Length: 138
Image (tube, rainbow, N blue to C red; front, side, top):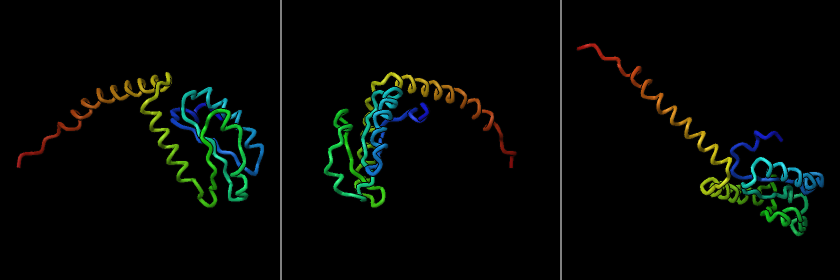
């Protein structure tokens, strides 16, 4: 994936298809790439398509355990655990954003602050130009 996909990310949801082994094998590559661009953000692993074979929920997937990542068994088709997954991911993302010590997050925040300050400095000039019209006497 292109580095811009990770820009300003505050959490990652890595999904593999339990019916396609190649997607599970790709998790390592995806995770390495993620950590290159966003080393600190929380990440969860998702085993999708459990509706095809519920026995898969009894399997142990070493990838999540190896990196101490939460593992969710979901079915996008029937909705099993989808809401829970997103609620948890959102909570992790918000917590990360509020407590981030990541250098890149700090740099990005400073850039946003500079941009906001510049916009605020420009605003009074625009207000003066737009509000100097006076109504004719009645």
